[in-house]
Amino acid sequence: MKQFPLIAFSVASMFLFSCQSATKDNTAVETKDSLATTTAAKDSSGVNSYNENTVKLVKLKLTTMLSDDLSKNVVSEASRKFILFEYDLNEDGNKEIFVGLTGPYFCGSGGCTFLLLDHEGQQITKFTVTDFPVLVAGTKTNGWKDLILSSGGKNHLMKFNGKTYPSNPTVQPVFEGVPGNDLPKFPGTVNGGFPWVSF
Image 1 (cartoon, helix red, strand yellow):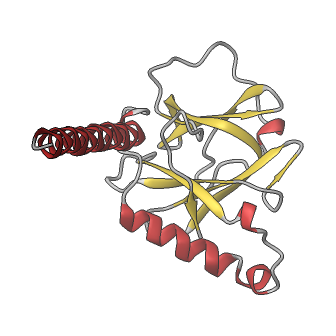
Image 2: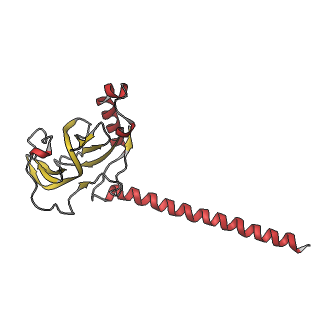
């Protein structure tokens, strides 16, 4: 009889410690996964993709730009999210902001709407019928990097005209050849590591 409580205590102790050990192992795995996602968001394109101040700036821009439709509940929950990517297209030391939009308000059978904003949130170009990825080419026009946008299953070369980029890629020249894997890109997929942000 005296041995029964001792055995029961030993078994309970082993069970308790093994549960705590398993919990610690799971936590470590989850931390590694979340760190990998954060790293992917910054490294998948070879450049720093975004920062929290830019997220706040884009949220403010979208809620201001869409205030009328938001107040009328025209913009569904599925359309109230975005991803972004920062890149200095004109090498002036300030990163421009690509904003990818989704949902039925911004997307149709031809593709989705993308915004290109300056570092202060002012619109440079509103691209239509565009798909991911957006690539930054190694060439320049009027001091700005050319862009390669996908639309209708083809890549199109977009050149800056001194004020803006063309808004519709389908009416621009098809990019001949295969874009290099080393080009900075805005993949816009879960696997690309760019998180969707609600507004």
